[in-house]
Length: 169
Image (cartoon, rainbow, N blue to C red; front, side, top):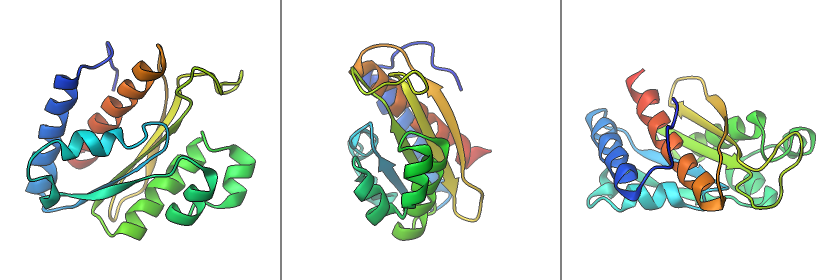
């Protein structure tokens, strides 16, 4: 999955419509666990009228404490790998799926900038993970370019595209 440009609101809305159809067709509920996007995934999904029929809700777990208490991310994982890591993203998505009883989940954690980056995790580094109930969680690392809004917007798009790929194989 590659993004050729920073997506517009209309493009994000179009992805939400596709996801709504896929989730409803499978009679599932979807949940999100968001850090760097601050609830933007949930916002895009709930912009659709009737989304309560297929979107259970989401959690914005910006702090490590909330990643632990709301999503069950292990303190050891956060200390060893950091909040922006494959391991944390995988624990976030699995925790969301388990704790909120949905059929499919997405989780995002990253460095949106303009500060906070390191040589190992520069601004624009994002981990996104997905999981379908009964399936294994998987995660992908992205390196997005642009300012804070561009990084977050690209993260939302990649998360939405990945939800659809998770559902359709």
